Length: 344
Ligand code: TLP
Image (cartoon, rainbow, N blue to C red):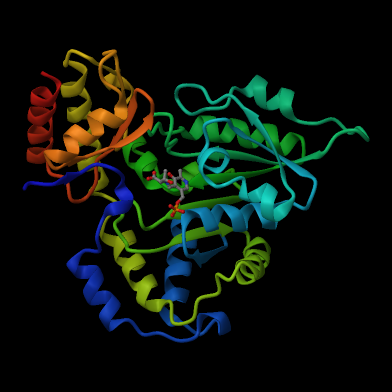
């Protein structure tokens, strides 16, 4: 059966070039700082994001966790979107492991936090309040249609934070998707951030790995935090080698994923029983609602799955499709064809 897997871009398999680079990788003990391939990847990513240093970690969740624990002490407060991955999908780990208090403010439909909401959430100096330490942004914004946050917006939030002595962390799991669709450089999107994470294992198709980037002293502290979380890897160069290929060969092709997502959204928008606005789809993530009362997302996902089309329900009547390296434009036409048959 023809399979088209749109559950996530995390399902991507390493490319042949990655597998070769992994097999050939020169390695050493990275906890001793002796893995030349990890060191090279960290230098490359730091350079690419315009930061002094970078740290290779196991996952996007670990990258965010390490960043939060490095910025914040117990009882600190972070301002973050109520739809953000950190708030929604990371087990409340910053509270569980770091005693960090979350202050959620509403994400707008385009993934932004309204300036007045940020300002209003910043604590004044009062013995009753926790201290606001950090503002978190997510770019692109997963649960908000994969929306990219533009340079002006990132700068404005940086200015608000700076004027209050607060740091900014960017969950840039898909920062390169944002850069590609906005026609800007990832480093410009990250310029105001005190720390920024990127994932190599999503649209860039590396098998494992994320990066935490920031100033040299921040990354030195983050390296200690990674170690206490059990994230000090040894001959990790076999993984970093794939990350180097991801960074050098897989960024520009993200535009194909974006074009496929847009085509998928336009096709789905024309179908009875589904609702979405294709103009909201700017990167590789497509969310849509089912408007029929006889169909829930779980049921539709199951019906599609029997036809080889895999999607993730993300609410009782909401589903998500994520285009990725293994999905061609021809696959999208096939998916639309299957949808129209299943919905009949
Ligand atoms: N997101 C996954 C799921 O957890 C939902 C996905 O399939 O999209 N930040 C953002 C914005 C993410 O979307 C994700 C993964 C992470 C962080 C965490 O990355 P991993 O899965 O590597 O821990």
